[in-house]
Image (tube, rainbow, N blue to C red; front, side):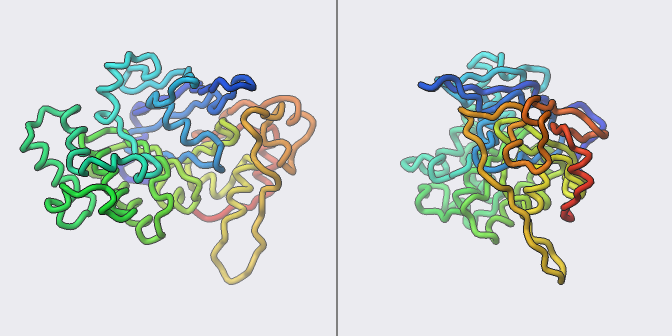
Length: 338
């Protein structure tokens, strides 16, 4: 648990019943289904799940970066304001200023025909009152802050002149340009080797402490969650199925899907044990099964699971689960040390 986490204050971000629906030729498809969670000041919250579970769409929905044929509903409260109901001019002041986002693939997120310095200065021009020379000075400071050597000489380079890890650092520099209080990171270490991945994650945590930021980190890597996050929310088929402190969920998962994810992680120790696997594949968002969406893949499923969709409910302070048989799942074990 980070020392920066302030558990005694109100949430920095409060999300209630966030839903994102896309209109398709086969009818509406709900990619994010009534998702609710809070992010505390200085906290790192991990959104975990298989590909297609709705993690990235959730992050984009928070910033209203989902466009037609998609629609976003619910409430996203930031500093007493609802981002979902906010006008476009007001929202532009929040995006990149108070709330910043690191996109999953820097190669496609960075403009290939603009220098990295100009791309950093665009953010500064939109969200600060700095003049041109001050913006350039700040851009050099940001590149130096994220660990890019000879920052002043790299300012006029283009994205293709940087390695994958350095491009990701540039993305972080752009995101931090206006000293945001909330950072949304969409798999910031995807496609990077483990050494660079570790450097990027340590950098995000260091900057979180330095700027007193909250962070929402999207990942499918439970090792990353164990090393960086205070709390985690597990997503499946567009819904949060379990959430709570990382240490608690790793020690005692209460949802069969969380149990399966943790059981597939290799454990340390001399004795060899067989890894668990989750049979089957995630359902299509256009054909979510009735009841609990995980029931076709769940060894604990009964008739009630196939009939009634469980609500996400608290079963202990700070811990929530959407499962009819969560006590039986917890009793079955298969936890790993965080």
